[in-house]
Image 1 (cartoon, rainbow, N blue to C red):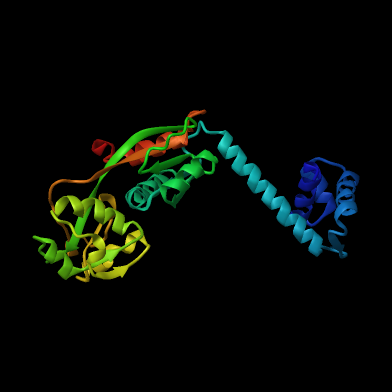
Image 2 (tube, helix red, strand yellow; image 1 turned 90 degrees about the horizontal axis):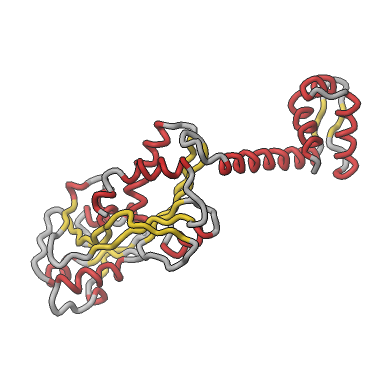
Length: 291
């Protein structure tokens, strides 16, 4: 579609009058009529012309939706190309669930300080994070395994321990205590529990030998049944720190520890936008000292 014709159409819809549209766009009324005629030659009638008003036809409504989508796409393009302004525009980030729970409140604080920023954050596993950054669907990503791809810059963002979390009043001295409590599982639960418990408990018989007391795939809900005394779980440190009722749970300390490195990803071929650099300054405070 000719952009000038679309602009004329949008102004005519808004103003409802050919004369005012011509004045708005600094065109002659004949030029406005010609633009609408050209569009109608391709799309069919766009307006029903009443004596004092214009009414959109179904084709007119469809074209108006299209014009608004084009305006929105143009706006997004301009935001992405003007990366020097750290006070406005869109910043996109994708992370695993645990670190995402820790970072999202910081992202909201940043957006509150700069309301013209648009923060887009999504939770995803490592494979999806890598794909999203490579496909330029997001600017920043965090993963638990460093990818081997020359198109990506990977730097240490933080380190995060796996934790054995039990109800606040529970005491765990041996494997029998875990069997008595039972396991609250989650999508990464058995893998994480195996990595931690196999090191903590000699003669580890395997997570599958434990009674399963529940399962959830929502990272923010895993500790709810633990807080109610329904079982224990193993999950990353930042997820536990984000839990709203810390007095209802307890971390069982012990050696050896299991600590994962979190890697910050972005495309290597071009520099980060000013907005992205500002986001990293905001979310890194208090986390980088653990890296």
